[in-house]
Length: 376
Image (cartoon, rainbow, N blue to C red; front, top):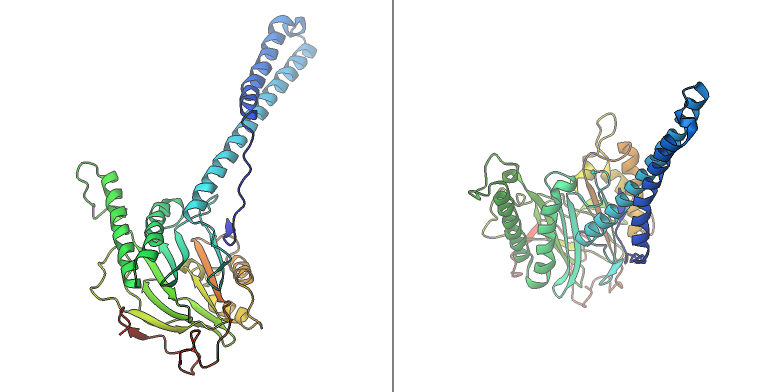
């Protein structure tokens, strides 16, 4: 199931409560009426007591009609309950991976997720975009595994990010908060699996849990800083095509290994007005066709970026998902999450930043320059 998450969702209209008792009465009363008709016919109708062929045919027809009515009524009740369960599950999943606003601090945003689990909206992929006093902060992550089993880990990481993004002055502090939240979540799962000891069994699947995380911070001047723990770097879409935002080696994923004492963020240059960032999970690149060939994500993005002007983020998502589903011949085997952010802020002087400060004339500075978190 593909769900585009952009804009404000419509609130469902509450149903009148007066109809619920009536529906319950009908759900119980109609099968009772059908059964009473069958019993009355068998006991009271003289035709039901005869043994000739015509009487047997009539009796069989009556009981067939009664049985069909019961099956139809039971089927309607089950479908009604299934719709209610799906509505509740959809509301819960939307609260977890809530829709993103179409615009945030001058950025045009669109996101979409394709869950490998049938009937699920949320899988093992996560993303969030939050405007803070430190800049627009973005997280994109991928939990080991996919589908409903990974939702608990997604909730732990996203909940921590939504608080830390506002509280922590630098990306290093945000990442350490996510790491601690994941560790607590894994310990709670270990206690649930081993209530007597609460220890994390090395042979347990919980011990092998990990999350790849990409953190980005986009300043008012378009300066992009990032911290990457095992996640694919996003692509920068511009008139020059599609290129990786950075080629720096990422840190290990969260979970199996402790974070290093010092984590300098990566300076990824500026996101100029009209340019866009394309974030994705590895389910997009790992999707295969019938011949086992991987999805050519870079080639598709180059074709999209070649359009002048660059399409809006919603159109970029539509183009990529169309090619992805065509390549995979249906739903891919792994969860896929895509996030596009386009800088729609007003352009400044070509050699001045958004605040009027001088910057290098190169369009894309080398993304592998490291700086300490304090900016030294």
